[in-house]
Length: 504
Ligand code: NAD
Image (tube, rainbow, N blue to C red; front, side, top):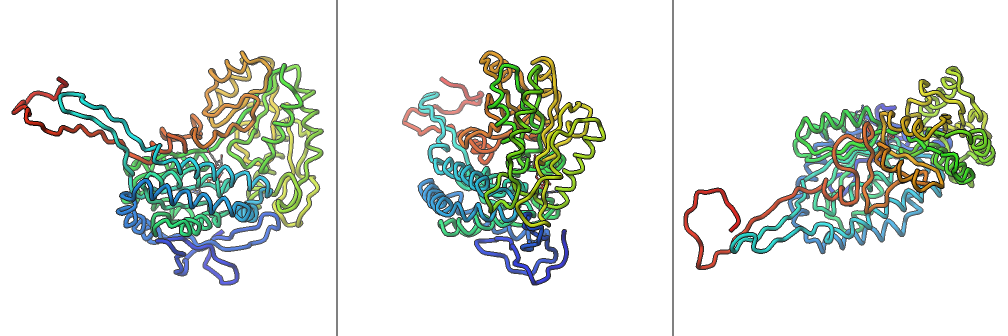
């Protein structure tokens, strides 16, 4: 929701050139506390000229930041890591208050964010190039990687701390400057990071935050001063960002939506599989891009597995994430209503609604954006609950009779973010990891989010571009390679030769 700024709510401001941008915003959005359903803050929405200001600050800062020594950069990164780590629970509280996920889950997200900062602390090692001596007479060749310039980072609502951290610590460590456009639904974590960067001694203008919507995103995509874009969000917007960003000559990585399948073979440990399905289906109210949404069960174990899942679901407590509960609210009322609409659609299309989350008891304010965990069985592949990314606490069981049929379902799906297989047969698991067309695979692990020194990213409609996030692919994305061929003359230099250079 947008409008002109009234004065009664605190305003989340842009952060430009090392300080909050205090000009009055022409447009603002509401930030809700999803557990109470009430507006808690307003967020300034950037105009094109606000984005231009942030890019100018980033451009000016880049001129000297790119020449800062690796020793200085890693010192600042280590300081930033210490500050974020000391105040991790404060950041988790901010995440819960705007996103709704339970505090322990928010802290888990923050810890995964810190792991990427730790990876970036190793930048001197990560930027080492190659060197070959004497490739020809008195000629040496070496490779170096250099930063790109100001880069734009655009992130979704579901991990307001972790997803921005997939990118900005590495971009900055590589010598770039950043303009971050976080989700307008939970913008405060990004500003919190900006304040911590300032405390860690990062020069002004290296890290900037602009808030808002399509206006800010479009300006970042077309601005000639922005050299690369990292995006995470839904598939239609990821495609749009990739097409428009590359059209204006930028390097783009755009991570999109998902529909993650968990395959359960008949020999699996069904208790382990039931725990995993519940954790991965309903953690963070299903608002994870790696959430399990479709449970593909190879018969004859579906009846037993469904009953184990149902038993476990009965123990889940839904409520305000600041209390002792398992699952919080959904992020907005509109999103909650959209997800609830899929429960009607599933019933209408003939699936069996084994657990209906609309009736869940809630430990929290009546007006929170609640929806309890829901389970469908006998889901068909023609149904919208199977085909759409629901992005809520709804798990669909699809029954198949063979491993081949299960694999075909995963591979026919347009998304390819994450998947998992549950089995005690090492050969079957190994075959699955080889044959499945998905970027991140779990073997008896339901949410296979790679650690920071590997790279995160899906296949097919879950990623547009060539580079995955963080790990060495992240370093590669935020740098350009250069190869230098050098010859320091000695008295025997060789005179004129118009032929193509060759080794001798
Ligand atoms: P979203 O696509 O609505 O928004 C993502 C970002 O794009 C936000 O910053 C938003 O302000 C901006 N945006 C929204 N509409 C836009 C438009 N028309 N033009 C330009 N910019 C626009 O996504 P969301 O609802 O915030 O997040 C949930 C989605 O993100 C899910 O689809 C989820 O699967 C996906 N996601 C993917 C990954 C991954 O790694 N692949 C990780 C997290 C989330």
